[in-house]
Length: 311
Image (tube, rainbow, N blue to C red; front, side, top):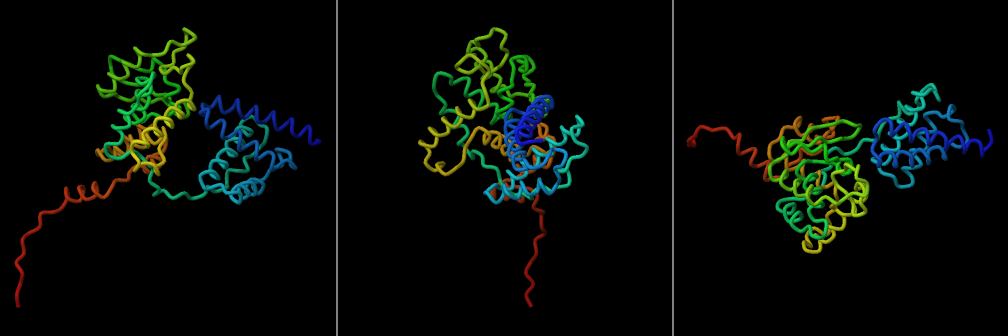
């Protein structure tokens, strides 16, 4: 097969993989990242047909990524991309085996603490939100910081997912896994205001809870840009935060951290966050020195009083 035919076949495989990921419920962000990884990988293995690719070809690709500055997380994502790609090919009998299955992931420091908004900064940030779409934006930020929603989940949220009378939210999470989030009264109040102020969509049939200024379902990137803009303004008023990486996802980190500090058990937190593995949730079980000291003081034993013995 000449180079032109090989390139055409690779494009066909990419189209197939794109459809496969959509069918398996992967998020738009994941689809985009995986397609980019596979495009690079197929280019690196252009001398071979897809049925000829071996583990060494994948390891060589990952090694090259590392040499070019990729960290452990990026390497592991690339490996996950290739594994998923070959899983799809095996599933539809393009190939007979997955050469990426036995390649080990890079070990990542599990003690790395996710950054979050400490103390009163979260309340100050929420109060700082201004502008024409204030209620919509406040509602989105509150759902991330007080209900633990991901940005992608905000984008997918429909009006029908919100039950006013029962004060619950149905969340369509990763891998099309649904979870139920009970909402506190204060959050219900804000969401009701957001519904009243909801932008009129261009299509009357549009059921998205959050609508962009252009009358369409708000996108993940739009939410991220709104957060970036508001955090930028917030940092101008709080110079002590200038070196801190704050983003829309950090609001979810803040929610998880608040829950841990409040004493929420790890299994409940896993359910609230929609994690498929409890190991993912465990990165949030970090508390500051103050919380550690308070915990130790709560369980200190009542010791008997000893008199010094003088010789």
